[in-house]
Image 1 (cartoon, rainbow, N blue to C red):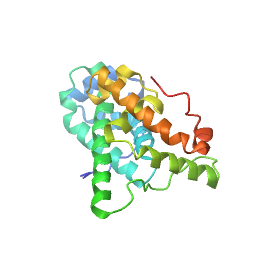
Image 2 (cartoon, rainbow, N blue to C red):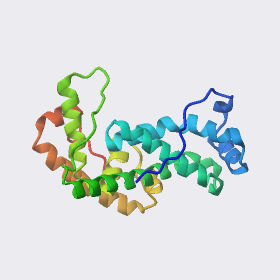
Image 3 (cartoon, rainbow, N blue to C red):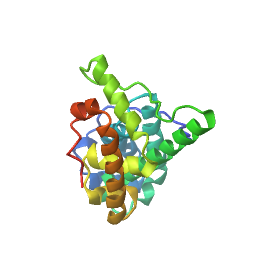
Length: 209
């Protein structure tokens, strides 16, 4: 369950946008007060995009982003390599997303709701049919296990490399490959039963390996 206690929001750029990740990371380690806001401004769009990709757009995305940064900022001083700030933030996002997916599944079991029920998905310039297809696609992803779904999303939607995915999830490259292979097989099987999804999302035949 998410336990967000503070609300974070974009703030006016204070010039830190010109800093490298390494410089910003060192400022976080030193405990510079402005560095937390600068990190939020730089990485919250990245985390928001990841959350929407994994879960589908909806009200929960904002809560997930808030939770990621609340956890991250509490642990920012433990960052060992300032140059790896981006990967450090992503690793927190992955952990929160895995927990949230697991929570959703457990909640659906306990309440006897369909585990594939998802919030409304917003699509720019999309008609009703396209929104319905995209909603069905996220329902399809809902049939994957939490780790499979995160790996599949990072590789196929976020287009992260195998190495980046392994680092973000704190698992081996071999495990990423195994989860990706299993997830791809399941998604391909489900897409075969829904040609409309295949045509809209152009996923068939382009799965990462």
